[in-house]
Length: 237
Image (cartoon, rainbow, N blue to C red; front, side):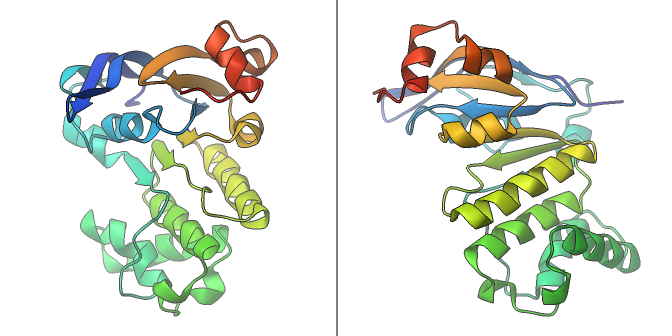
């Protein structure tokens, strides 16, 4: 059974006396690439961490389909803007998540090697992961996530530190992983990237969901003044 949809209802998060997420309600379904779009400081990364279970909201509910929370956690993965590379080889990094799940050595090595081939890193398998370029490290983080065969893959600004060439490689990999069956939930403030990647857009501003709609409709005829202002390139504070 699928763990999707993911339902958030009236999710609120505060820190230092400031409301960072304010009554967020949204639904993330299967089969889509959902981009959480908004200016810097909108709360995108916090929202993604709440969806993935890394943060608990002060109020509101976050629920996956079904009653087995442990199963839901085991069927999702997340890649951060600056992924942590272990003091190990590229192959060992790619296999690490499988090791934590108790997958036997033969299977986890085979799955890790397959993920490295998909991400173009097979020739670097024996290299110290910390010596890879920034773009290669991000591809390795995607390989590590993909080796887990997640139903849902969360991506937090995965190309924010990359040049256009490396960004294109990551976007292509996101498309391939989605093609293998993973639902993608990704944050970005980059309009061009959202246009290239998204099937659906959740537009976030000052911790609130302003609009959620299919990407084609959002970019053609957004329904909210704030959405239209953002698309015009106006700064939203």
